[in-house]
Image (cartoon, rainbow, N blue to C red; front, side, top):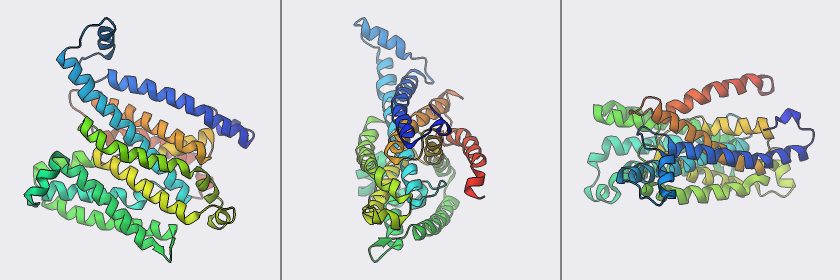
Length: 354
């Protein structure tokens, strides 16, 4: 992939960014095959494909591992990785801040609080509610919590039909602190079993991936990502300031509304089914801006492709590095993402006036 410093004109950068679509799509295909092929069991994807090519049926164990365990995990990983990366790119463009991530709109804090309430106080909920949600109680509670916190934050930051990005940023910090305080109280009263569930959920994992869970989350993520892809021109204009964007014909307030709802939907669904996974939303857009430039028309697509690939790589590492046990995927993304993020900060420290 060509470095941005080697590109002479905006047209060159646009061509490089579009060429990156192909390379990143190819990378995603390769990583997806690796995700299907590698796991704690000895089941081989290649042996299974060879059987199918010869017209031989798969054993029941091979079919279960490849189709019921690895395949939904692959699909869910693509959805979650793409949604986190695109949400990060949208937030950084909306706030015009390279440190912005989906958590700034309250999704992560609200989703975490919703999940903690479901885990710690689930036994006190009405029986009919538990029966309706079944095993999806925690994901449903996390999604509702993320969406509710985003709507509260939006109402606080909107006055006279105009949403203040600065107010949203400050209110997001306050809301995150409040949610953290309430979560701390619930963690304090949790028993040992609940604490283990809270720790595993908070660090993120794709271990619970099923086709049912994927089919619930995927449509909302796909709809949100589709809406995000329409924001490229608007985010490019917003980079010059709200007043300038308005004067060149960009409907700034409508774009803000779409961006906030998009991030709430995509990140809320992703966090609900995978738990807390960090650094994807911050690091991926940064890397792509350095490589192909800041044009959001291509950045959003490339973020989806690279975000999905990186999360699948982290998932493969998490389930093979200490097999047959599994490391929470949030630990892997932090180990991989933190050094990259520090490198980015050091590279751009003079520009960011730190």
